Image (cartoon, rainbow, N blue to C red; front, side):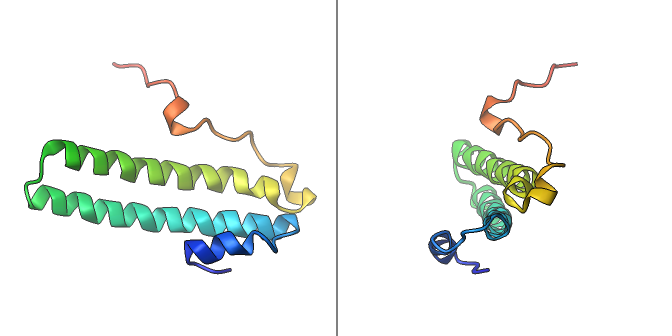
Length: 105
């Protein structure tokens, strides 16, 4: 499976069966985790360079969102695999932006 996002996108044209589609989504989840690591590096640099707080906060939010997307893909991508695996797949998680806030204690 290609690792560059543009190559991964191109591979969708040939991903005809569920196992190939599952592999593409699995690789995308891995790339999102890599993106989160890059964003975390930028966040640390923004803090070290004493950039404005909104910059640091935005990078923190983006890092969390990338990780949430990767985790969500891990949960839903098995649904694209062959039918034998799809029968045990739980319902997809709600996107992070739609989740209700946790109650305060």
